[in-house]
Structure formats: C-alpha cells, structure tokens
Image (tube, rainbow, N blue to C red; front, side, top):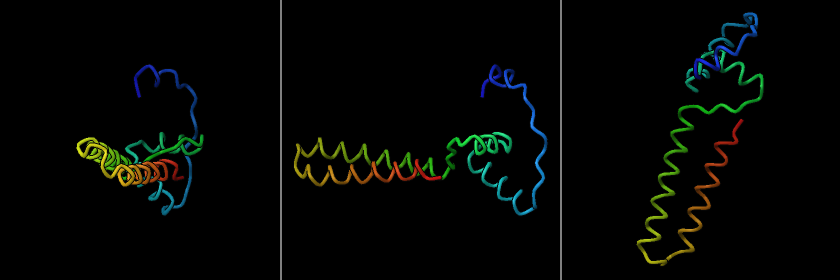
Length: 102
C-alpha cells in the first residue's frame, strides 16, 4: 500500500475483543496472506478475497506447468494436441478452483 493510500484513510475502528483461540487463528491467517491483522480483518469484513502464500505459490506453479505444456505442444508439431489440450483445461480449472476458494 502506498503512502498516499494510507493518508486518505482517516476512519478509525475500535479494537476488537475475541477469545484467545480466535486471535491465534486470525493472526495465523493474516500472516499466511502476508497482511497486517488490520488489513486482513478489513478485507474479510468487506468481502475481499485473500489468498494465502501457499495458494499463490500453487497457482504460480500451475501456471508454469501450463506454459511447459504449451511449449511441449509447439515442439511436438501438433501431435497429441487433444491430450495437451485436456491437460491445459484441467490446469485452468485447478487455478480457478484455488482462486475462487472462500
């Protein structure tokens, strides 16, 4: 977040009381998303999507695999195009499932 975005945020929310177990969960989820607790809670309250570092890493790896499939297809001169296509469709579906996860 840039300095100019922070300056525009003038509203304040009071501290939130919760059980220790809830605090641990929120802290862990915020850390996993590389967000501050305030950013994470605001995103959750406003219904914005958050993605854990693990999910983002998996999506990046799936995209790399898709790129490799595309490369293999081009190198193969179009042979096995149906098989390459079905693999690419499955990779895209897996990425979509991860990105749409609540």
